[in-house]
Structures are given as structure tokens and as C-alpha cells.
Length: 340
Image 1 (cartoon, one colour):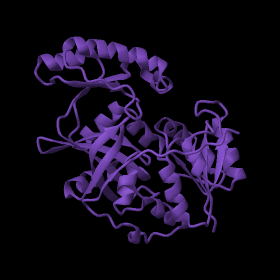
Image 2 (spheres, rainbow, N blue to C red):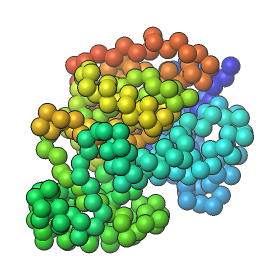
Image 3 (cartoon, rainbow, N blue to C red):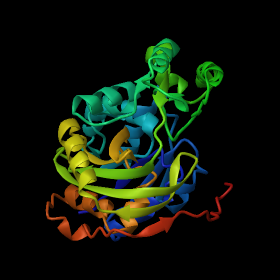
């Protein structure tokens, strides 16, 4: 059985392309689609396909054409902004016979909207930073002593830490909040924020503590499989740049609780802080995150598990050899991109 995997919004995720190529072991093709043929991940894929922007009216039809022409077994998205679009059209895309490894519209709605994420965490009894969408409510909390500087100001619907400020005074907060609204209208997040543009910027409590990333893995039916954790030692451009694997039952408990309540499918990236010896959950990204390579290299081969699940195999324990204390760092390399 040939297994052909299509990566959409492939971008810079060369490592995932190569992890999947290793897992398939020549029994299928890894195909990358992007609106830019010079995207680095296109170079390592077996086939590279140019598609329109995710906001193009013909985007879904273009994907259906690619899926049919290349006999795609499963589609994996690598972009937060694409997830709401794919989840909305998931049933339509799966009429082609391909498995669309994207969670339901309800899951994507909760995880994509940081206010709904906040409410979800509070609803299942997890700690999460205090969050506001207006200056009025934030200043009320500050005056009551429930919120203190420095704060975090960021887009409600955001991706890869685009547009984050850390105001340390009332003047800075007012300026940052206003500037974020101006910048939002000029950024790639503008389309995603139109549903509530007046409440599209968040003011959030800034936690002082250690930061962690979790990969919470469910099977394709939404059943919990496991939680795999790394401590973030260094960040760059909103992604984990250096990290060390850890095993701690406190994270397992939180990961399982999130998974069983939200019922996502596949791997979901989650940010966690430890502050004052309490665990605070910040964000959920229901896709392979930029921190996945740290988990993979520490012994959890979620990529191979995906392949086995696509084959209908449920015995995947041999791919879980996660070890604590494995430290890794990302580094840059040059890739030649054909000009024509």
C-alpha cells in the first residue's frame, strides 16, 4: 500500500518532510504544497506543487485537484492560519478519499481564538494567565491590584508570536494597545481578525517562570495517546530554538485532561509555564509545532505513528522511546533553490 502525504503551507518545515520520508521508507511520496516554489521545504519533498494563497477563492478546489492527481493518502497542514479553512472544508476534501489530519471546526475555533482558549482552560479547572480585550477592563484589574506590570499585548488570533509587546507602564500599555490595532490591519492576521476587530488585541498577565512545550498526541479518532514535554531553554522568532526533554507526571495529567476534553486529532502543540510552583497553560496549536523536532529526537516518533495509524495499525508502542535529559539546539543551513 503506497502512502502519499501532502503537506500544505510547507514553508520552512524541512525536518518534517525528512522525518516523514524516513518513516515511509520508500513506500510512498512526500509532496509539499506552498504558494511560493522557493519555500525551503519544497526542496526536500519528492514533489513540489505551487498552489494559490489560502485566502484565494480557488484554494480548496486547487487542493482537491492536487489530492486527486497525486493519489494523496493524507493531508497535513503546517500553518495556524490555514487550519480554520481546512476544518471548514474537511468533509468536502475527504470526498476525494484522502484523510485530512485536521481537527473539527469546534476544536480549531477554541484553539485559534485565544479568548476561547482562555475560557476552555478555566472551564476544565486549569491555571492560565489573566486575559482582557479592552483597556478599560485591564485598567480596572490593575487598579484593584489583580493585574501588575509588565504585561503582554498580542493579537487574539495570532501565529508564531507575531506582534507581541511587553508594556511596563500605563503609558506604554496605551501606546502598545493602539499600535497593535494599527499593525494588525497591515499584517497577515488581518483577515483572521475581522470577526471581532474591536476585540482583536489581548492584554495578558505576564508570567515570570520557566517555559515548557508539550506535544499532546491523540489518535485520529480523538483518543488520548500521550504527552511529551520539553523545557524551552532559548527562543527565536516565536519558536523554540534550544530545549531539553523532561518527564514529569504533572504535565502528563494536564495533557491528558486537555486531550480528553477537547478531542483534537493528531499532535497538538501546547505552551506551559511553571510560576510559583504552579503550572499555567497558555496556548494550543493543533498541529505539529516548531518544537516537535525536540520531542522526535528525544524518542517519540509521532511521524511513524501517523503512518501506522494510516495503515490501520494500532500497535505503535515501539515508536515511543521518550527519554528525559536529551538536549538539542536548532541551527541554520544553506539550501540551494533552483531559480527556474
